[in-house]
Length: 219
Image 1 (cartoon, one colour):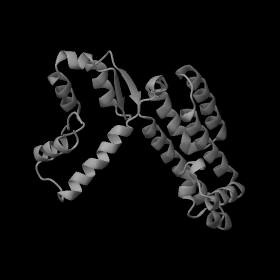
Image 2 (spheres, rainbow, N blue to C red):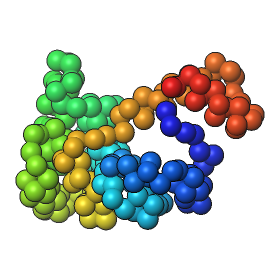
Image 3 (cartoon, one colour):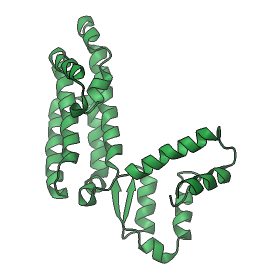
Image 4 (cartoon, rainbow, N blue to C red):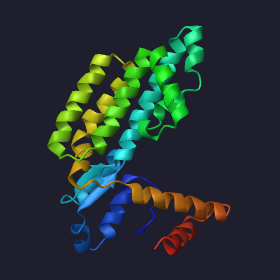
């Protein structure tokens, strides 16, 4: 743990960077962020030598939201018998295919039969996940990503088109993941620990006290 800031505002982050010794700022090699324009813009301004990487799990979360929106739309528009078959399928669709239990695999196979559209949606999700799991360089990943984007366009799944816009806006920094495969997994682990600290104290009314407790316990 390096520090805890009061908020996600641009001026707060700029002030934190400005307070760093010049050598420390110049020593930053990679900045891994979620898809926040403020984080990206401040990092580019204050540490221009650093490579910016979009956390792959935030990208996947964004896709999952599109997948779930598609599932809801399919279920909403389905005829009554089909709608009943699709009821309660959310976690089977969102869960990684290789993590499914035998009974969930059977449920997924049935869903494929009930809704070919949902089958295409789920297969696109799994293809995208496999793309990030594969051992490949950024150029190869870019080519595969372009092919995947074309399949999404051809699918006609309206709710996934917004995700294509997200990919287009953040593509350069998303593909930087394939250089060093850096993620925010460590930071997310710290976030869980911070939540535990907060629960144990039944909350904090003083931000600075909370910050000091976090820095003390998360060294």
